[in-house]
Amino acid sequence: MGYQILFSMLVIISALASFINSKYLKLPKSIGLTLTTLLISLVVLILLKIFPDWFLPVKDLLSGVDFKDIVLNTMLSYLLFAGSLHVNSIDLKQEFFPILKLASLGVVISTLITAILVHYISILLNFPISFPMCLVFGALISPTDPIAVLAVFKTTKSISQSTKTKIIGEALFNDAAGILLFIVLLGIVYSHDSVSLFSLSTTLIQQALGGLLLGFVLGKFVSFFLRMIDDKEVAILFTLALSSSGFILASAIDVSQAITMVIAGLVIGHDMKTKNFAKKTIVSLDSFWELVDEVLNSFLFVLIGLEMLTIDFNIKLICIGILSFIAIFIARYISVSSILINCITFFYNKNLSKKAYWKENLLMSWGGIRGGISIALALMIPENNSNSIITLTYVVVILSIVLQGSTFKWIVTKLYPKKES
Image (tube, helix red, strand yellow):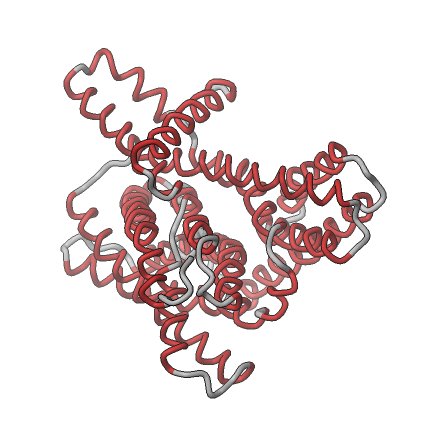
């Protein structure tokens, strides 16, 4: 599909879905766009059964979108850069240790528990999925998307800034950690040679530290030029150049692209608040990247809905997916719980009440909503094992967006009822 046709189609469907949601559904944007596009996909599938000759071209057009390429190779760099640019670096620094552990050790714990539970669920339902593939699934489903959560945060003052920062910061870094772990595990599963612990550790260190270093250098390099100019168009062009070419450069030298973009965004965001930037530059960059974030996330949720047209659904896989959704929440609750207990014990107030800890743990667990990155990663799996994992991933992501996204505000009001605005 040509880029012009693709872009036009995404804009038209996004605009239509946004109008329907804003005028009639009045749901959070992420949920409204996903449900509206799912409905469009469902209508196309029904009409295809009734009038196959008329609607086959429509299905071919809508399902011709290369979800993996668009999300991982086009949108991801801008989404990560935009997300990290608006994170408060001072708050992030205060919560550095919990976020680091949640986005590293927490991802590993969650991946392992998810793999064990999903493996035995598949056996129980007589549709066995191998444990190595369940590990791959556990890794690809670990990245969380805070977009639905952020909308709730803007309307409540009852949640502590510490908890908000942990959820937002973890979502940024666990994208990078989940992608990295997925690539490593996928390489091991499909490697014909034995993989040593040393080579595995070397790859992880190279990817992570290399991405961190490259992101810092690129961020400081661009920040140096931004401090010297008072032209909003030039400032925007510099950040666009960074978010596009930096992603390509990271791939070329074999370091984590996601970590590179997150660190670069954090560096520039920090310098905008602490260095001598022109006020016009700060305002224009904030406004532009907020708009980019909104538009690309709208496209992403539309793409999630359209992907239904390409999924080969199976009743057993749908059942496994529903049970896997529950298993993934359990895995996240355990991983978040274990990490937070450790951080509270060693870095924070040891006398923190059990009630306050339980509230934060539940909120962070339910706020771990899955998104389009997980679907894009599932589409990277070679075809001989991909169908079952893609279907599982799609079912989990849809349930996560709809159920967790629609009930998150209700959870907040129940856990923190006093200061709701």
